[in-house]
Every structure is written in structure tokens, then in C-alpha cells.
Image (tube, rainbow, N blue to C red; front, side, top):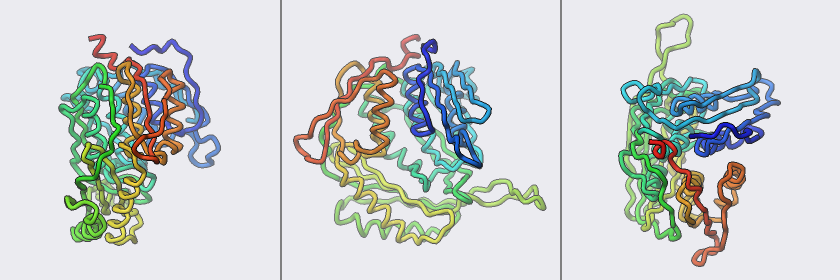
Length: 402
């Protein structure tokens, strides 16, 4: 079980907040995070999406202890055992309903990706339904990818670690960012029923050549012609690169939320109105590269510009090289570190490994007692680096106890 007798590891600021919580839960190490927005005059301390993530971790674990200071600028987290949707852990009918408040400005992928990292090491299958007025299924202006990109570009990577059965992400109701980029009233369900003792060692050194491009154009509460215009603009750029290009169209009505108008307390108003595009390119060796674009909540961007923007973002992701994209790199590297005590290797572009997010992840892993990374130049691509990661061999503590 998790060893909470250790002195908490100390971190400062809210950077890499979700990543540090996930590493703490996987390794069983308590952490203490201080100086969380201490100088903010209006909203010091933890933000609504960070509080929501803490509630999610409390729901899928047993024995976790969370202490927050009066001002919200200091957090101490002592992780428990990852139980998933086990009976008696708060699940109703095998499903945990997790509600997100209307003040949340982050997309649902901010919660989905950490949950996907915990799910393979859970004692029981994970079945979580994200609901409430704050669920945003599209991409967001702050950099969150859409739920479609999680389904098509993140979840398939788990198969490379031997985790592929009974995994499904259902988008039950779509939504875009609401007024001022907050709220959306969507609905998403993650079913992760494949738990393993240890992930398989990964060797991914050949990016291959792009063989197909798939995508989803979606709109909520706006005419369906917006999808057709986005698809036509994106295909005009992508068709010369990959002949096998197909973009699906998904049209849905805008969700309703209770109105805040005091003159009509029982009324309802539309939210989550907008449109967006998610693109995924797949190579001959199974490598995935994704891109997202979404209309701003204030409007004013024509669908043609959005389609071209998403297509160019996909080309930029391909130009960075490597066998994994910048979006998927943290997930892949974390699973490699939690695998069996063997050396795994993955080829990554220099522009990806040089980002602040990946460098910070490497430093955090060292603080949690995980192995350091080895680097060498790639023999085939001059702009790529081969990273060697030695697994820690801890894996699923719940399955070992059972």
C-alpha cells in the first residue's frame, strides 16, 4: 500500500499541478505544494478546476488525505490506494458521477488524461461519468485538447503498453466553452476496464510515414454548414499530403442550464455554443499526431479560418518529428517510468523534449524517486533524440495485494 510515513515532498507554485498529484498517487509519496497564486489580488490559492481534480482523486482512491490552508495557497496531499469504481467507494451502480461546477474554465481532457494514467493501476475497473454545467468537451483557449483527441490520439497509445481491453470514451453530450470561456454543460463517460500488474516495456523508435488522417468536425447550437466549411478548408491543405483523409461531421443542439435571471428563476438558457475541429494523423508504425482548433466564446472567427488553422497545427505537430507528439509525451513517459524494471526507448523530437513541460516532468520524476532519463542522438533523424527510461517496477499495488 502507499507509504504515507515519508516526509512530504515539497513543491512551490501551481505549475504541473495535475502531473505532481498523479505522480504522488502512483508512487504513494505525500506532497506539499505551497505558494499557490499567493500574489493574486482577486483569486489567490487553488482554482476551481484544481479543486475539482482533488475531488476526483478522492473519489477514485481510498484513504487519501487532503489538507488545504485557510487561504488556499498551501496544499498537503497524502495519497491512498487507487480503488477505481469498486463497490463501497462512492460508486452508484458501478459508476462514479463526478460533477464539474460552472466556474471551471478547463476542458474535460484536463481531468480525463490524469484519470487514464491512474486507471491501469486501479484495484477495480474505472467508470466515471463527468457531468454538470462545467463540462467542456471541446478544446479550450488555455490549451486543453478536446475529448475527441483524447479518444483518438491518447487512448490508443495504451495498447503499446499491453493495455487495450474494455477501454472506451463516450461523448454523450457535446459542448463548447460558454460565456467568458467557462462552463459548457456537456457529458462524458470514461470506461477503463483493463487493469495490469505492470505495463509492458515500450520500444518505439520508428516514426514511419503518414498513411491516413482522420478527424471530427463538431458544432453545438449553430448551423451544420459550419462543419462543411471547416472540413472543406482543412481538406484543401491535407489532401496533397495524405490521400486517405476523412473528417466526420457531428451536429448537436446546445445544452441548457438553469437561468441566473432573477426575474425568471425557473427558466433555462443555452450554453456551450460554438464549433471546432479535431484532427489525428496516423503513421505506418502506429504513431499518432493530433491538432485541435475551437471557435472562441466571443465568436468572430469564420469556419474556414478555423479549418485551416487546425490543418496547419497538424502539419506543425508532424514537423516536430519523433514517434510521439508533444500532447502524448507526458503520458507515454509516465507509463514507461511505472513499467517493469527494464529499459524502454522512445524517439522524440528535440522541439518536444525541450519544452518546459517535459523538462519539468523529468525533474519531478527524479524527486519522486523514479529513474532518470538517458539521451542519445537518433541515427535516422538529425532532429530527434532517443530517450531511455528504466521502469520502477512498482506498478499496480492493488493487484499485488489481491
